[in-house]
Image 1: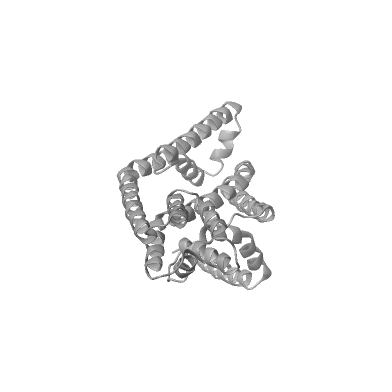
Image 2: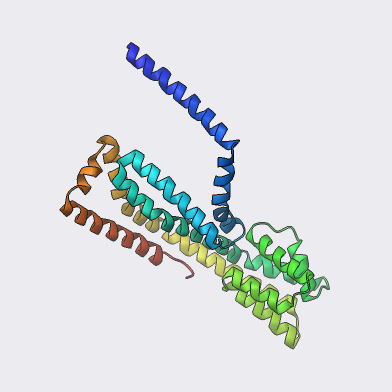
Length: 283
């Protein structure tokens, strides 16, 4: 090993240690608190299904803009940094919406369990309001526990059953919860065996969930292949830039190349949107 190589290895090791110390220092400083506050809306969208406020969206957009612009500057220079920075706010909004959609999807998947839990509480002699409160404290986890907990607290504060159920419908995006809520309100007004009806609803919803899961499994490979093919040009561009720094800068320096590159990016984005829309199940 030459002296230059040995010095380079020592410098790399020292650089890693310095980066580790810098990260530790950032974690104990106010910077970490500011970053945690900025990404808090993103976490809340996935854990609580909460929509960020205008101030939170602005803060998250600024963080995404700065992060992507810095990454683009380090990898490919100022032009790419400007492009990535401009896409930062849009990507931040898409990230929040994606986590919110996953939250709603998990909530919809738990609808049969909600119906069955309410049926068990009603069969035990509870009223509708008491059954909802009982279901909220029955040891459920995930989004359904969050929403039933909010419904139970609303009932404890004296809100009407209709208002609590309507809010649950809205938060869950309708779907299976429309059926559950309609069954509760119908049987409350007309009488009958609500516990038995909810068990029948739970069986129907479970069959629907199984069919949707089978459809997703059947199309998973095709959707993955489509997304992989759509992402190959971007991956090739990153590899080319890493292999030959400045390559992308040379491409965007020509007006004709810029036009062709813009058309290619638009077509790739349309392909991604089409793949996601065609592969959507239960829409």
